[in-house]
Amino acid sequence: MSPVGHLPRRTLVKRSAIAEAATTLFLHHGFRATSMDDIATTAGVSKVTLYKQFGDKRTLFETVVLGITDRAVTITAGIEATLAGIDTADQLEPALVDLAISYTSAVVTPGVVRLRRLVLAEAERFPDLAAAYFDGAPRRALDALAAGFGRLDERGLLTVPAPDTAATQFAYLVLGPLLDRALFRPGSRSRRAEVVAAAGAGVATFLAAYQSRTSSRSMPSSPLVKRSSARR
Amino acid sequence: MSPVGHLPRRTLVKRSAIAEAATTLFLHHGFRATSMDDIATTAGVSKVTLYKQFGDKRTLFETVVLGITDRAVTITAGIEATLAGIDTADQLEPALVDLAISYTSAVVTPGVVRLRRLVLAEAERFPDLAAAYFDGAPRRALDALAAGFGRLDERGLLTVPAPDTAATQFAYLVLGPLLDRALFRPGSRSRRAEVVAAAGAGVATFLAAYQSRTSSRSMPSSPLVKRSSARR
DNA sequence: GTCTATAGCAGGATAGAC
DNA sequence: GTCTATCCTGCTATAGAC
Image 1 (cartoon, rainbow over the protein chains, first blue to last red):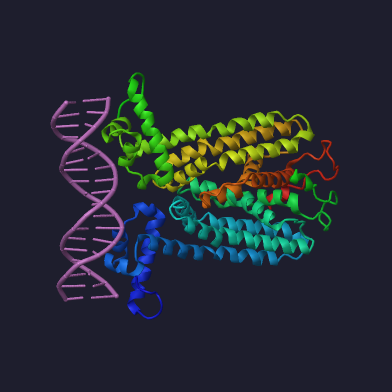
Image 2 (tube, rainbow over the protein chains, first blue to last red):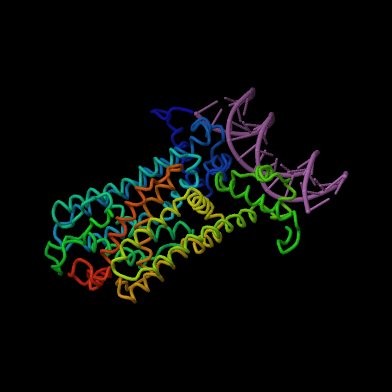
């Protein structure tokens, strides 16, 4: 397994060709059903080159999966920006709906859904990889949400005693149903209208629990339904 | 592939031995990594008997997965009973928390989690099976929740304009985070305290959106946060 | 109906030429 | 560094004895 360090010129071209081929094949057929022969052929490379570059099948698999995971992290970027851009109470609901729409749209992408299936399929054989994926992608999105909600709480736009809990609830409210459908129905593209509807319904429920009633807005009323009862 | 119709006496014993062995092995190692040899050996049966009974590997797999799915349906039973037993507003929150706890506990069971991983892993190769599983297990739970919430709405205990949406939100609120952790961290048993906390937090958010404010209860206040805004 | 034995093939990994 | 050719194991599925 050659070090990926610095120099080899055309070697890197082949390396990325292999990575790309392996990515596609693993995502579509899984770990066991993808053969090193298929990967080599698809990449236009001999099997020996493949083994010299990546050692063995397991290593290639882990490298590839972590590579895609890194790409998927870009989803997180938009979250912080959107939440930080909220200044007034009037912007709250439309901004959260926009956030929910773009977040959901990004995650129900066929590629991301396949990655999720693949990681779960091999979670028992590659537990570290599953953990790394979860911490690398979904977890970061949740952290970004929590940080944003925490800041909105400080500014008095939301009342969020536990930002982590709120972030999790937000994510699963708006994303859960569509993601599960995408996972269990391969090839079923979510239509835009569905994403918008799910985002709207999820945000409405979220705001019912977390919107600060004291900050302007239409209704005066109750100071947030008693959360102490949640502890039982 | 022999008909499973009526008589063969000791054949049925072997058949269930095969099914049991196949269930365990498929759940632990997946479709590709489980060999017919392993199944036959584990079941204490020759491969020929196995092929006579189930035709081929795909058929055996589908039969086994649908078999476990049927068992998982028992989760649904308790839902309707619990929701139907709610008579007064005071019982609402504790009953929903109990429901959330038992529902979550049942779904994050190692066996159910493995089944979910397995079905997802093969969703692209067995799309009909994935659909059958989803309609057979999770979908039924959601339907039971929706029916229950609809009846609570009629009785004025909840204000639920869209029972399906509410059911989905309830399920993902209380179950989502723990299920994902169970899926991505094999071997991580959820502790009771975590399940209780997740249930309490989820139900609190759910009730903030759907509890009828007019029906007794501690706070008088607002008539449910305007849902029309969700449409944008 | 059930077994042992085997056909036939695909997959992971490597030896040795260039 | 890269290739072709090959080793060996393990897999699905079946032929033929009892």
